Amino acid sequence: MNEILDELLGRAADSFARHEEDAALEHLLEAWREARAEPVIALVQRLSDRLGQSLTPLDIGSSWETQLERRHPMDLPRMLVSLLEFASRSNWRETSKRLEKLRQWPADPRFVPVLASISRMPVVDDFRVLAAFCDVFMHVGPPYDVQPLRALKVRLPPVLSFVTRQLDRVIRLGAAWVPPVLGAESVALCEALRDAIEARAGQERQDAGTREGLLARVYAAPEDDSARMVLADQLLGLGDPLGEFIMLQYASEPDTPRIARLLAMHRVKWEAPLGRVIERGRTRFERGFPVAVRMTADDPGSRPPEPGPAWGTVREVDWNPLIGTWDDLVERWSVWLRHPNLRYVTRLRHVPAVLASRLGGLALPVQRLEMGGDLLRTAPGVFDTLAVLPHLKWVELPEAVPSDVALCASSPLAARLERFEAARDGAWKVEVSRTAEVPVRATLMSERHVDALATVLRAAARFNTYGLRLSCARKLDAEAEGRLRSAAEEYARVDWE
Image (cartoon, rainbow, N blue to C red; front, side, top):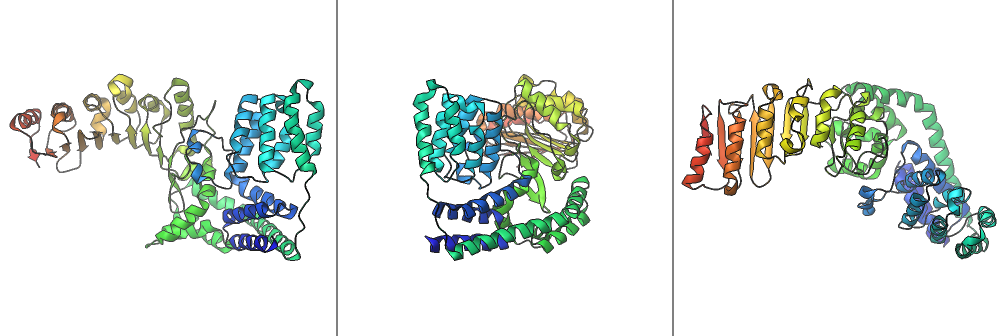
């Protein structure tokens, strides 16, 4: 056992020295599964606590459940925070559900302190919670302190005797545990890694003020490259991978494989300051910081978490199409979008029309907006509302119907749009660009949609009648071509491709 354990501890030390701390934690978890010794448990908890300092709680929602293969070692403690919140509120339904889901995870010593805390809470007196609680303890296994479990057993009412038998098995398993004896080399490796963690933490505490000041400069003035470069120099001196990442993304010829590796190892930590409202793994980084995010489809609860200062570098928010559009949820996000930390967001994608209808009153800096289609049915006044946005100059409707084009073209917004795009997948698309030599471009993908495109062309003429470039994926018969030519008569110039 000791040879395998020493190898795993050595890998953890090497990863930590390279500032690959997530990888170091994974090696320590493997070491714990090899030998469930207290020094290893202490290292797992210390490194996990260190990595979790900037992370927000993570609820086990639908979007997370579809990404089980992408689980990160720091997902678990974030989920345990959410579990404790429900348990402390005596919400037996959510507590038992989350306890059951924990068994999807490999055994992990970080379960134990949270389970010990729950054992002292009234919620565990519910038989459903108690059963799930015992199942998780059996899943994790020892070592654990049996005293809180014995105290729990004493206070349980007699009516729960059928579940108490499960608790008895957990207590017997923990009481019978014999701690493994580590060899001298294993003990030395644990002590050396503990000292390395503490030394790095101490150095970071000394430099924290400077780092936080530079980060604040980046968030407050995201176009200021000087703050990023000074921050990168400081982080490089500390060996922090973010410093290398910033420099690589500034390079005239970036090392793409190295950037991808750094993202694979550190993305969770670098996304974390944005909070739990974003979908993991979908953030785009530029110059070392997030610039584009995709919102999670999980319910944010009664109120989405307030966007922190880290949102200062974000320019684009993709409004996940799976997000609901019912009124109370739209109201929550409307409030969220007003936050001053979102003052640099200039592009919104996949915005539900009902939410877009609320944007006009928010004084947002949005310049480019993408919405869902069939607006005449779902939000007929949306373009009148959007006309209030002073900077909006580009509108996209990727799932449009012909009436959407007419609705926009006849609105007050149309006169100041620099670009308008609308499309129906596999049917037609139209682009209007006021600065182009030919302002209106239209494409027919399927002859079955000739009449729809004809309607679109007549509506698009309200944007600009100077010129139209029309292309068809296939040659049309004379009748179909005639219908399009008739629709294009309002344009001064028509180019066929």
